[in-house]
Image (cartoon, rainbow, N blue to C red; front, top):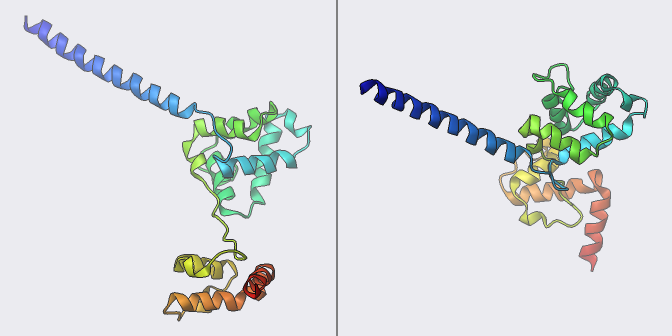
Amino acid sequence: MKKTVKFNMYSNRYISSFVSLILTVFLTLTKAGKPLKPGQCEVCVKVMEKFIDSIDEDVKKSQGAIEESFQEFCKNLKDMKEHRFCYYIGGLEESATKILPTMSKPVSSHMPPLKICEKIRDGDSQICELKYEKKIDLANVNLKKLKVKDLKKILSDWGEDRACMDCPEKSDFIKKVEELMPKYDPEAFKKRSEKQEL
């Protein structure tokens, strides 16, 4: 009688472990299999569009040639998010993982960038977490409504990180941005000036 109880107890553990495993696999597959919508996975889609436009039709015929071309392409990327994307999929020498075949096979099949990114995302979900930083439209933005962090970023993008080291107030940052705008973004300065005249 005791042996039967032990057997049932062990079989219940195995059954619950098996059910947990099946549930985990099911949830992973349903999450990974969802199609991307336009606007999602923006860094991947943009990089793939640029890469596909940069290679010849002859290169698109060979997965090996696609992978080599992609590694060369990644060396020239300046944007940090795009560089990070290359790192994630193995386009850089220092990449920890190499999932380039996940990208090269769909490229050789002439899949659109959004579908290619779905395939890559299924291999590494962090790919779609990469997002471009939103640019501030200096011509139309109300500087008073920006956070100090955003004002500092504007100055930093202009290479003027040290321009406002002693600025104690938000209004000081606003003045510094307005003062430097004609030098770094004359078009936005002109539009702002025209709006103030009206």
